[in-house]
Image (tube, rainbow, N blue to C red; front, side, top):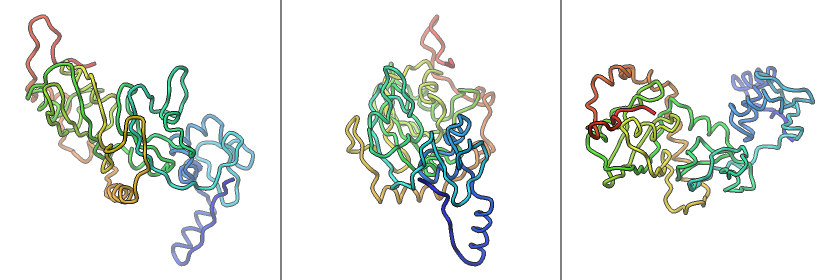
Length: 295
C-alpha cells in the first residue's frame, strides 16, 4: 500500500511543504517517485483507466494528497522499493519493452529480476550491448530527456569498406527524419567498422545515417551510456551499478542542460544548408544507387 507521504520542516521549507500538502502532487510524479514507472508511462496508465485514487478512476493531471490510497489495476501501490540500476548486456533478438508479444522475448523476461524494472531507452531488436534498467522513474526521465545530450558509445559494422569521406560526413551531421543529426565523434576501428559517440537518440539513428550513404549496418553494439560501460558483462548477463558508478552518473545528471539541442546550438545548420556544404562520399558507379539516399 502506498499513501502520499506527510512531510515536516520549518520556516520557508515548512511553508512550501504545507502548500504541497494542501494541493497534493500530480499522480504521474507520485508514481514515478514511488518507482512504479516513468511519468510518461504513468500518463498512459491514467489514460487507460488503470489507476484509481480512493476507489475512483483517476484522470490526467489529478493530484494525490497525504493519506489517499493509490491503486494500479486494483492492487495497492507498494511503498518505495530499494533503488536499483541494472547494467544489462542485451543480446540481439531481444526487444527493449515491458510489453509481451507472441513469439518474442523482451528485456524484462531476459533479466527476470525480482523487482519490477523498466528499460532506460531502447536498443533495436537487431542490436546488442548495454541497456540500463531501473525502478527509479525520475532517474529514467533525466537520462532520457532529449536536451541533455548525454553520450552513448557504439561499435558499428557495415557491409562494405568505410572511407574517410564517409566518416567525415557522419561526423558533421546527416539529414534524416526531417532534421540534421548533431555533430558526433566517429573513429575507424577496422576496414568495415567504426566507433561512434552520439548525444542524440533518434529512431534507428545510426542505421538511418549509414543508409543515407548507401551503407548497411551488419552489426551494432552499444558499449557505453554516459560513464557506465559494458565491461565485464557477458551477453545476456547483468549486474547492479556500483555506488561509485551511481555517484558519477548522478554527478553528470546534475550538470545536465534541459534545453533542446537546437536552442543550445542556435547556429546549427538547416537540412538545406547541410546539403549545400557537404562533400559527399563517392558514388558506387554508374547505374548503382547513389550513396546519398534516405531510408
